[in-house]
Image (cartoon, rainbow, N blue to C red; front, side):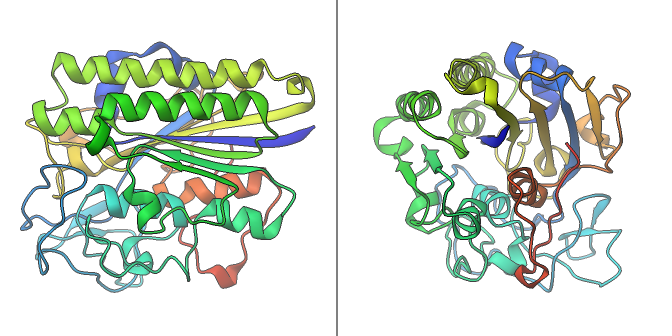
Length: 346
């Protein structure tokens, strides 16, 4: 059996809205696989809330702090910066709960104080030192077929997902509209999963975030955007199951988000609604019984990941996604990489 991994990112997806709206494909993965939540260990209460995921944040509204902290049990410091109550090193991350820091953390397996992206300006990224997990996979195993597809061009422009990835498609949702960009990204990803060697694939979908900025996450348009993205995910899974070699492959699907939103729309701050993130993990063709990856008490977000009887891993974090994908492909994380994330037992 050849291990293969699909990672799907849905920007600005609030976990409580996901749970309440019950999109069928995501809900099926949660039921058959494992999932959990955690709180981002960063957020700037004093910073202006981002109006869109591509806004260039004025210099001085956010800055990198000292060291990284665990997302579990994060609190807020006296300066209004989210910190981790479980960190014994005293490290504090000063960063906005924006898309740039979130996706950079997912890509690199380290928090913003290391990868250097503290807002959406990408002023001083450290992607040469902390490359994305697909680039690391290529370096460790040149035989792998890697691909990344995204409707937010900044992820390629600034190098969060680097040029060494085998196939990389970056569209501009602002230029061609987010529904159009997501649709084209989904079609390309579906074709890749159906017709190539596809060992490690990353797909980013952005309409949920854009709608939430404009109208908030409780509007009918947000529901529609989520269900559209859920349908794209279903097409990815159908493409995988339809592969002629599927019987000889072991596929794991990971789904995550970069941040949440306040009820009126927007993010960047320290509220639980903005800082709550999730990871869903499921193995296609297997039913491990809906294991609970663990979850932080979300307080104001009003929801804790349900315990479906599986192992509690203490709350999966964004930085755990990349190491998990690498571990599933038999690639051990080198301590010299300085990663903050660890592989989840999925």
